[in-house]
Image (cartoon, rainbow, N blue to C red; front, top):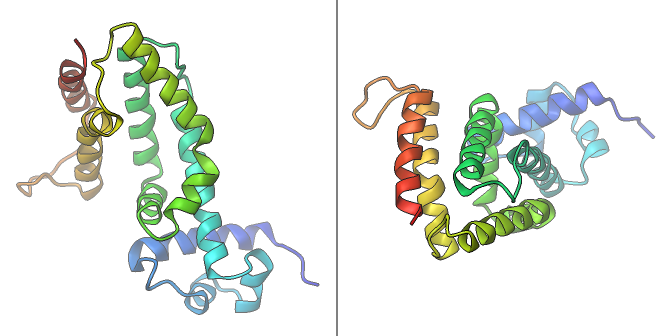
Length: 196
């Protein structure tokens, strides 16, 4: 039986992420991945039982990293403004530093693999965020609104700005970089919309 080589495994994961982002789930194949990674197809099956297993495991690993990062320095007991600010900081930091992984995770989250991936990784995060929102409403720091409306207002503008940053241009085609000043401007408007 062949043994696992962690260096090869990391190369395979990185190439898989690159290929998923550039070719999508439908265009992704094990033979092409093996070729791009410089390994045999048989080597891939040391690490993963099949294509679905590989995609699911990569999605879970990225997702765990993402949601762990979202909780760094965050507490459900924080004031609403401080807690949401920490979420914005953590989300923007992760999305900028790990741009390829973030794009891959978003792609997988909205694919047929999404539910299986999210079921494995979001439990603690969901509990912390639910408690945070409940506390903020009870302390009258947050308007009582449905979760979907909350999420779209709380994070929609941040994700739009991060997408413009990733593309490097604004909607008008001008160069764009997400600065702290721009992020603060958007954050302050979000706080106005969500607080009593």
